[in-house]
Image (cartoon, rainbow, N blue to C red; front, side, top):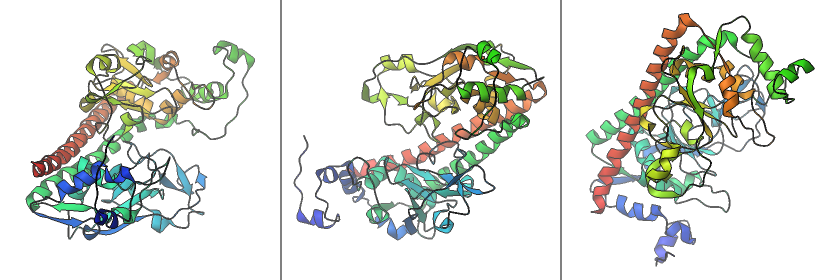
Length: 450
């Protein structure tokens, strides 16, 4: 049990907060350290043009961008691919100007999971954001936006932002709660170095997403006109059900038929025929430790920076969950069809058993990069969705994934592999740059408590 004596002035200056969780949080300790800054501090309000969240509004979802705005939730904003296919009606979204997102802003999750931050690049500019995002608009005459993002994302900024969380089951923070957190104004040369790393990281992510789209566009002529959750029906002959493992569910029979129709008269191989292994991690109890091997859930592995995890397992446990560079992981439970390529920065990380591991054989006809591009394409995602089963929580199994048909476009092999290789290089470097910037700030502030 923790205990602490506080002065009345501490309560007065914190919006009359009496809850122990606030006064005993890391944020209070870290604020004292930041206040030892040998240079100077300004408040967040002083270095920004605006700190605001959108008004609460009713969302009317639509199926495409012709009648809708791209919609961004707090959980989607941290993903490597923010285009999740969610759109809200242009006609019924009357507060577009207050909800739109612009480049070089900092987005902060302020409900549920608190403190996730994102530095927006040009990919965000077509999005309307949920009201559960605090928008921080840096005043570039007073502070460099990349530097401000790196501070708010480091352990000191994170604890300062999240210390103001209030509520019972679902925590919240409001824009006015964070206006007065201290922002260390360090020497201009130091700020510029950090800013450059963050800006370059943002640009690399834009380039990476562009390259991945070019790679997946090869499969666009096979696009299946179906979106997960939309309504579709078809007649299925009993003979086909008998030959398809006696599955009666619509996903398997209707969507798989749409996929098969696109692959008619096209050369294909199955994932199993190209893989040395398709498997999942062990279903076992995990005891998390303070330090050890980073552990990723399937939602964390899809983040723009998956290395920022707070879960670790010991080395003995990690052996069974470890993934290796070059493997392909796809989700097998909950939200299906989300696929990642294991990059150098997460080589040997431990990943939940809910990630199906696909290890492409070195002597296979197609490469791991070609297969990754296919699984990220429209027809690839639908091929995965077709095999889902379950009611509330959908699932996939390794056996079905092995049966998925992959079209073989031999004349496009080199182009796809080149684009995916560059995508991996850009994405991996973006993470390295961001981590380096955050590390520089943390090491500088760590010296102030010595």
